[in-house]
Image (cartoon, rainbow over all chains, first blue to last red):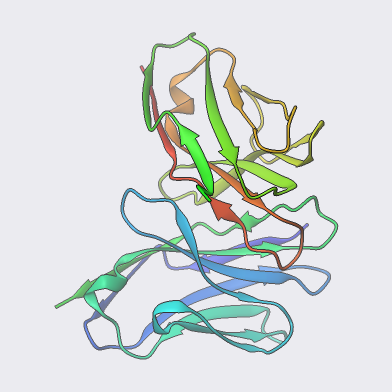
Length: 114
Length: 113
C-alpha cells in the first residue's frame, strides 16, 4: 500500500529564507503526487502536482517541487519565504485504479519569522 | 460554480446523538471522499465513493456511514457520536483518478461532549 511521510511537523524560517518541506512516499508503482496548503480555519487548496510530464514542478505562490524517483521524494521548496506563506502544508499520493483516493501525510506547519 | 459545499460549519453534539454532515458538489465529479483532520495526524480518509451508488471504506470508517444516491451529494452520518469523533471534517471531490485535482470543502468543526 502506498504511504506518505512528511519529515518535521513544524518548520520555522525567517522571512526571505529558503523554505524546504520534505515529503517521501512509498509506492510499488509510479505515483501521482500533490502538495496542498491549508491556511488557518480554511479548507485545503492545491499548490502543485506531479504528473510525470516533468520532474520539476512549479506551483502557485512561487513554490516548486522536484520528483526524485531514486530517493522516493517530492520535497517542496520556495527560494524566499514571505509572511503570508505561514500555513500547514500536506503532501499526498494517489495511484491510478485506487478509487480516486488521496492518501495524505501528517502535515508540516510552516512558521515565518519577521 | 459553488465547488464543494459543506453544512453545517460548526456543530456541538452530546455523546450518543446522531447527525448528518452534508456535502454537495456542482462540478459533476465522480469521486467524492470524506476526511477527518486531527492535530498531528494529517487527513485520514473515512469513506469514499467512485460514483452514485458505490461507496467504500477508508482508513477510519468505524462509527460513520455514507451513501451516494446522486452524483452531487455525499452525506456522512454519525450513528452514535462519541468524544473521539471530535474533529474537523472535510469533504472532497475530483473528476477522475490519478492526476486529477481533488477539491475540498471548507470543513465542518464538530465537537462531541
